[in-house]
Length: 119
Image (cartoon, rainbow, N blue to C red; front, side):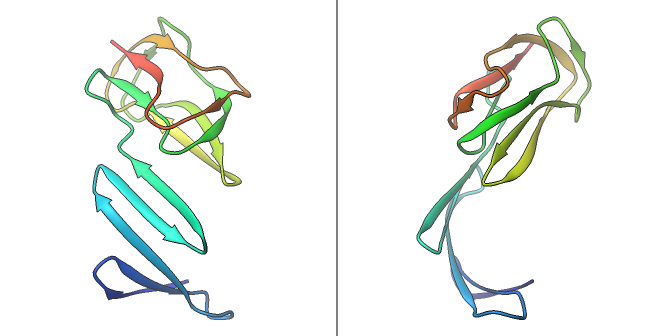
């Protein structure tokens, strides 16, 4: 895949076989939006000030790997989301103890809703 910037927030993407696609990107590093092929994608920072992890996009929880009271190390996968046929692990931003798990496997979740809270 080849990605080339063609202007501020505008990228040309090719896979070397098919036609070229244009992707438009806007926002800040903490709240990034991409527009491609009639679809809108959003990536938001997953660590909240209250030490909660949130979904970066709407998705389905496919694995919950922690329970309240579990000690976790920074970088440990706490749960796995599936969105747009891709699995995305949500990882602990720091060492801590799981205070609350606010989701269950199979549940559809939305961005900016706390899924796992750390102490």
